[in-house]
Image (cartoon, rainbow, N blue to C red; front, side, top):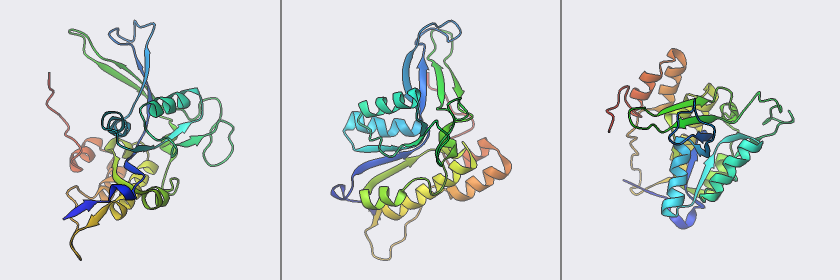
Length: 233
């Protein structure tokens, strides 16, 4: 048996590791015909931290990488408006200086997705622009996980399968993140008790994916989803 770390010991209830993208929403007009769009943001891991903060008043933070430009700061402001702590974002400057940097020409970018919600018989559609995002460059050792999990304290950690597929670096970072979480979040109730993971070994699955590049097998083997999910209408 186990329990989470006591709330009074932790600065955060939840920490999420993942990619955050700017989302353009043309509402009920297909993007091909749209001339205006609402600006939001998105990302499965971010949605967890933001939902728990905004809806339930939990103390949450997000671990990610963003280019320090107008798009990145727009995303940051949206997160702050929802009550999510943004102090752990790794900012990539556009002056090509330092380990976290790029140029001002978009060599690295903040991810963007365009999501048309669908209307009537026209299905919804999402298009992604995320091949060269800053967060893909983050790897083991880039985040101060000792500070986050030990000094500051966290009660629950979350990341996603898609994040592990962004690049070999993010896969290794996700493994480092989960190992640190397992060592510092759960408190054993029984002396010399055994902690039994109910999920497969993510590290082994990630290494296998890097060899065969089969995303469907990875998702199914980790229990994170199925190749064909039944759709609810």
